[in-house]
Image 1: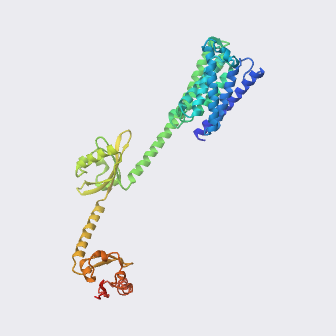
Image 2: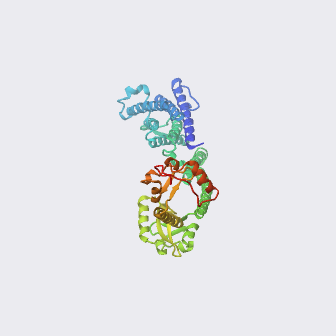
Image 3: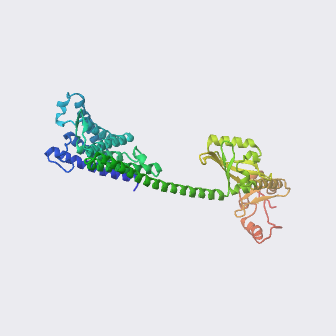
Length: 489
């Protein structure tokens, strides 16, 4: 299950729990009977607080079940807006010294702590449903959770909690509702909103937080429950001693577990890193093109592969730590300075060819491409070299041969022509051939067949020219031809 689905399920469960708590509180307010969630020994929440818990939970449930539905978003926005406006007005009855109380007496206005909690929950739901300010949605939801957690701790310790200007118990129903609704609001904000983004992922810090915070919180609660509610009532000294002993024991267990977990993850990370380095080394060494890694600031070689050694004739030991200019690889050192400057400006410049020199002094023509990389926290240049010396020499020889052929073809006193073997279309002719067939220009000849020009028929060409050539006779072939004006030659 992916993280988004997991958070959505947690949000749905929390919203369903909040709906159950809110419905129970509203039912108790309506009929005045206790329930398992709000027992008669605990003070019930104000009627408006009960209704607010139910409204916010229903809006959160609609948003959590179908977060991509526009209708469900509008339901959540309506529920959040209603509770936010009326809770602000309800809180105003306390801040205005009773001036607004007659207007909201039917609401049985909540105390400031309960009103502030409802306002935070409504604001969290509203920002999340709108789709903007999800960070605020997560923050407000976390505050709601924190308020509920603190109130629940107050019930564990049995001490009073401040409400308004007097010391009084806060409703246990409201505390439990704040816990579950806060959880639902935080998870509904999504995996990329704070604080969820801190706990999500495979990083060591995320794993530590996912385990450390729940374990420490659980350890504190268990320790305090044991010492405060059991032993402290018999002996305060015994309770303090036991609290210290259990705290140390729990701390050792948590630290031991985390050290094993982190150690195992670090071993896994190191093993993956070693495997990755080995794969990189194998690929780097086996690439048929020359590869080098040099420092970007001073140009010193960090690593070279086997193909680089073959191209330039230097061993790895001779190259690493040296600069290419010190080894004399560049025939013109200014080429390197200009190229590195372009790499720094463009990042990945187009492939270029450079005249370079091998260890034995042989001139090389090298195709080079580079890009800037981070190599062990150091800015470096990854260069790829392809030796095209033989290819360029072959191309130059071909050009020279073509020029020689062209010169001989054009200057020959004998009529010469080049035709396509299969179609017989004219490709090239020289001046004596034009004179032979009576053409005034090459344009009259090129692109046409001998039959189209009337020089000879396709049957004659097939029988007297192509058939003997296919049989291996390439000399002394005789075929009748005509000039363009029809005169036989």
